[in-house]
Image 1 (tube, helix red, strand yellow):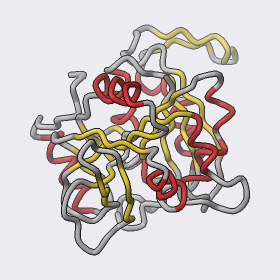
Image 2: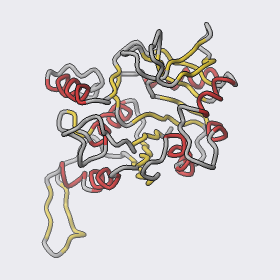
Image 3: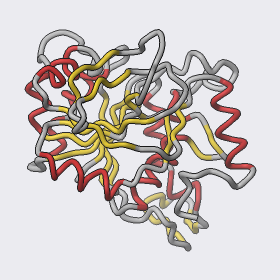
Length: 261
């Protein structure tokens, strides 16, 4: 199963850190947050990634194009640049990374629609944001998604309330979606989605569509969204304060998402 990661964010609320780089490239413990997200999925055996690029996407391309040379010892002969010998193997061997230009200023739904062709014949795919980390049980999440047969599974979190609130039935069927309410009473949408390809039927080919608006609200109206409960760690990186918090967790060796260590 492939993982689509939304990587087009500007990072405008993290000043003095994200002025020259896109939000997914902001470093945590010396590595971009997008790397941390991908390492987490890879830990669960999923390492086929589709990155939806936008603002300063070239820096994400450069990071992966130069990945081998930046972390490995190597020997090269000057004048023969196609003859580079790498001396050590790293833990990311086997990752497949598709870097897709989905446009500057493109909204989340349209970004996802533009990478549909890279999913191949897969009926299901995972989707998440490129600016938040958590310790969601990916194996249990996928199992839950496949068990209920609906189009989208949303991971429901319990962080400080400022995100899209989920209105639920007792069986966790989502019946309403309120994007960024004034006050949050219960669980909120924290990304870590699993989706069937029928999601694309809810994203209009015309215009610039926000996934969290009409598509998800219509899925809720059609009883085609279910919530996977996550009571563990989850932290987005929206502000400079979030950036400092995540780095302090890494520095103190208390980062719950770094399960690969």
